Amino acid sequence: YMLVFNGEIFNFIEVRSELEQKGYTFVSDSDSEVLLASYIEWGSKCLEKFNGMWAFAIWDREKKELFMSRDRFGVKPLFYTCLSETDQAYAFASEMKALTPLMTQVTANRELVMNPQHIVSYESTEQCVINGIKRFPAGSYAYINQNGMTITKWWDTLDHIPQVPKRYEEQVEMFRELFLDACKLRMRSDVTIGTALSGGLDSSATICAMAHLSKNDKDVRMNHDWQHAFVATFPGTTMDESLYARKVTDFLGIQSTFVEIDPGKAIDQLNSYLYLFEDVYLTSPIPMMMLYHSLREHGTLVTIDGHGADELFGGYTFDFIHALKDAGLNKKDIDMILTAYLDSFPNDGSNMALASRSKLRTYLNYVRRDLVKHTVRRDKLYKSSAAGRIEYQKFDTLNKILYTSSHETILPTLLRNYDRYSMASGVEIRMPFMDYRIVSMAFALDWRSKLHGGYSKAIIRDAMAPFMPKEIAYRKTKIGFNTPIVEWMQGPLKAYFEDMINSSSFSNCDLIKPEPVREQVKQVLYNEHATFAMGEAAWCSIYPYLWEQAVLKAQSI
Image 1 (tube, rainbow, N blue to C red):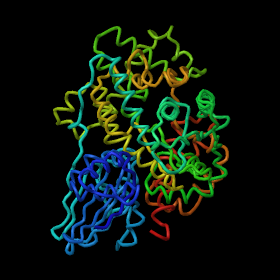
Image 2: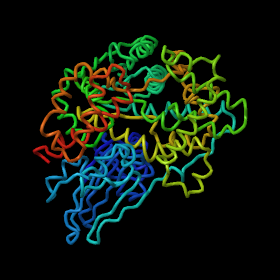
Image 3: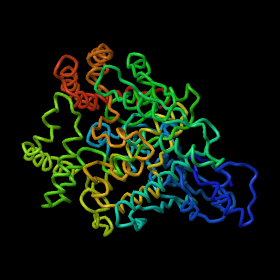
Image 4: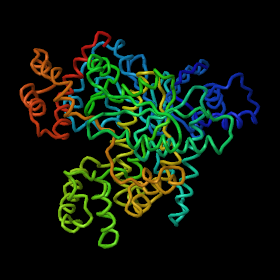
């Protein structure tokens, strides 16, 4: 056999024990050896035993057959192309750029590249931004032999919804146990581990879980060198959450590394970043590329991060809006949801009235209009491919939205993005919220367990509050990791954008409409009242041009 493997099997020790009882012996402590032995013993059924993230291929020299697989949720990338249908010749890789030298022609998938609305909708499909390359589906495996390629889906979350306790307090206990175990498995590492800490609930819960485990669980297989928090800062902007991150590290008594995101220092690397990133992007990958590069520079090669919680447990503001449908005519539930919705806005001057509980009734009609607006727009965006499944139809409205955003739209895109951000610097991200047991449990909970007591992601807050600063666990406002686009475009990146929109290559780019896009960018560059939404839209419109210059026209592609 020959094995090519990208990723980690976090529970390889338990799987190895099971194989040893069957008579297998091992010469290393590697999960790769366990993976191969598992396939030899169980064939494709071995995948059901793994808790991890992976893309791998095994060549069976006797059968002259290739077996390929990708993890349940597509955390690790896998692409392939058919080089010859006549000869049944295929090539596969973790990056598209590894396949393009083998192709006779490299062209853009114009429908994807030119339409920003597709940015969060194609990652769960086989479509790629380069024609002729396909994305291997998550939760699937394939056999390739002289008869061709046969892909089989081996994982569907809808087939694995567990029974959960009816009482909310017992659900909290169940979640806490699962989450701590998910973190414990991911703390197995022979290199230094750390966390990309924002100060928000999810990353804070993750590092606080690590601290609790290190102190109370003496399992020698865990790496207890975990005290490495890296915080991206945007000094002088509304996007900066470093104050909250510092509250967490002070609570834990650990040092943190604050990484000031200065686009002026990275603009020369933008083309390189985009080349590494490969796909079209909503704004700029600069901040996260810089953050994970800093982890590498400081010798932290594995980071345990909080990605996935928002999409699974209802962390976005619009999730409250969808929950109104579930509340029906229950006045108590409606008031709870509306209060939580309004409280989620930052309590600054621009939102002071909106965030004021005393004026909740005044804004009732506003929120109901928002409900209609978001529901109409998002019902189109979130049309699930699982809509015909009985298991999906049993979900309440919130869970239908969360299922689609976690399995088909937002989360698959985020998983791709963060893998690119980190691996560009050789840093591996592990995500306890993406443990398949937690994902499955998330969809066994109804909307009240996620928006309990007027809080988003309530079950996470209540489960982890004993180990966290209370002001972080029950903080209602949400900033999210957003780039201060307008400040950048009107400041350190202004000259860069001016040169770009006046260049001949920009005027000749056929992936955009140069004149309208030029005017759109100017509306951000020279308008003191430009909003974040305007900046985001400008980046979206200009990105096909940036992508063409950095990716499609690159020498190696």
